Image (cartoon, rainbow, N blue to C red; front, side, top):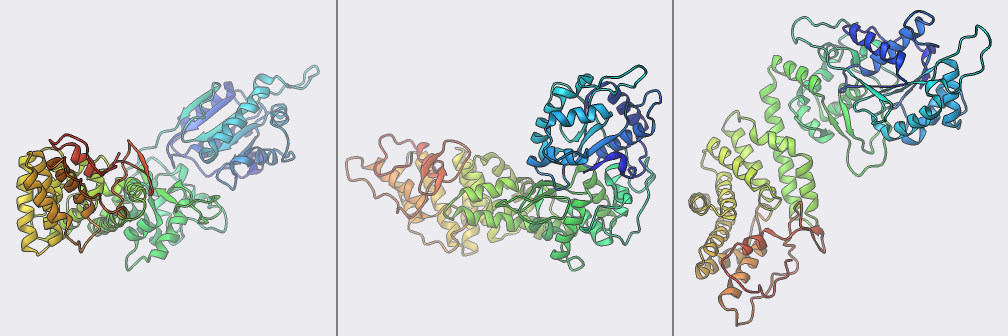
Length: 566
């Protein structure tokens, strides 16, 4: 937070001559301009360069009247409740000065207000701008001027943000990235820093040579320390936002420890290489004001920085090893999600899978490097069985499994489980012939690998198919076998309670006049989380189970006795 006239000029800006001229002309005739663009494109430095130039051109043709400006950096320890107070202090007024008085003060002195990088507090900035414009536009509060006196113009406001504020008086000036050629010449020229200096320091602001907002990411890469460059490059394989754990898994190796990778995140964030998507409770340094959050902070590598990092990763010959580490980390994420699904609140699993969906999808679709890598991808697809079967992603799951089964042809226990899952999903989709073929192959593979859990789940799926064929006797045999099985690996796939539900439905439909079959044990929660149709159980807001969905598809009519699934 500072008054622009008292600050040193921004670092040299190159390649923006046309934008500087256009923005200066727009400011000369418009009270509110919002400079928008993606992260690291140079919004803040372009705005400051134009305002600094206006301060030097006071009195010249085309210059802004007054010429000075007051600035608030909205990421510099400013929260939503303190934007107005910060602007008052920057203007040399008491912190509790009303916006109307502040507007008069700035309009009378020809000061332009610069709300810089206001995305974290966009709502508060929008409210403050509305208050200022009510009294400051058009010189409504100009002082009485005598003969020959210069009358200052009305208040002008410049905002830099990724998105417009959405105000009626707002004019939007979009800044686009400059073209950059990796490995060759670039249209930008900026001062370079010694390669052994880190990308930033928690002890103070970044030096001018680290102003990444106006430089190509390729030039910024050269300003980082070797360790930070390595972390940046390895993070470029991540397609979505990520937390510190995933960053450590992907970037951490023998040459960079997980702790060093975490420290590099803070430096890259303060250098504006990384964007902060969600603030957690951790202290990330002076550039970020944390607030209490039950979740860790999440980061994103913007597209331009990601492209530069990926090129550096390929040039270093590390892409294959980094992609393997990425897929291994996604396997751990998928395993954690499937374990959470069997816990007391399945929303935890659904939330985890949804939060990491970009990474999980990439781990399933990236071409495997070898048989081991293909098997890891297949294992991820099996671990996400609940997402495919119970969270409305059946078509996606079937497509992934079909592709991965073609890529991973080794006879393994994981392949047997994948064949079962593909057959079960096909049975749910009424693709009976496909399901029969897949389940036959799954049963033979499970028998070869002595996997009784998969054999029991194959029996459950065969029972479902028998129900669809209106063959209750065969269905009861298969479902009883699955319901009575004691699972050794209870984490993947539906458990015995799922089979008990279908068995009870089958027996009730066979002999409707007799006593209904006992309901499953109340210790089982049969309602997986999905997106819609929620009901309430002892474990929170959930939806009817896929077992009930399977029962709905059976040819039997009548009341399902003893079952309360709706």
